[in-house]
Length: 231
Ligand SMILES: C[S@@+](CC[C@H](N)C(=O)[O-])C[C@H]1O[C@@H](n2cnc3c(N)ncnc32)[C@H](O)[C@@H]1O
Image (tube, rainbow, N blue to C red; front, side, top):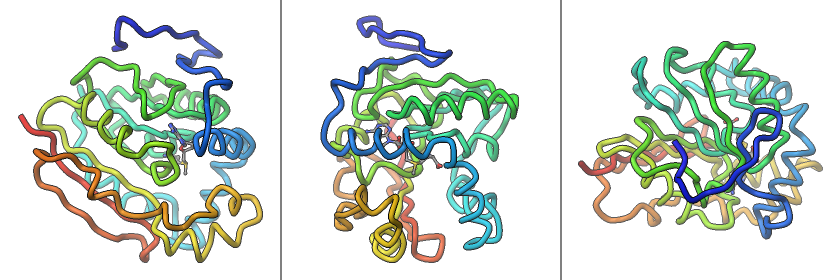
């Protein structure tokens, strides 16, 4: 699964490829925010989605239904957070979740155990994935990308680790959500101060990708893009 040259340590069952001293910029802001809110993330999301969309499932299925996952597939989610998406997907497949916040991954591991989902959690920056080329059958991302240090690199990494012909799905918040909601929230506003970062990254999809599609969903709060890697 991992590239031969990369070194890691195992922390509470999570493969960790970074140490905190090496994280900088927006990625460091993310670690500080998500490490702090990790214990409350799942419940706060549940309440928010219930009030805004009727349920968490109704919210998440608006983009998760883009994914076709077979029982034998290896599935990667970058920025997996506490792995909330996994419970809505084919539970026979094999899941890998990457995140920069170890605290979020600790919650993710507990959740996946509780939901009996076969999963591996990897602590690293999405801009530097430790996986071999063309390893995954399904690759997706939901939330986080807008405020990465390097969105382009992260997208290229998703493509590198996907098998030829894989559909890649990327979902994140729109500027409307940042302005109307995050910037009014005392916990989130420091992290989301620059709303312009929440722009649809279509120009970052490299030439040669197929079936590129873009859509605004979830009452204008979320963008969804998808494309297929060439054979
Ligand atoms: C809004 S949460 C999304 C969590 C999950 N995907 C979901 O749908 O609920 C964003 C996640 O992105 C992670 N993150 C932010 N920057 C990252 C980076 N450069 N590499 C990997 N993960 C990152 C954060 O730690 C956080 O868990």
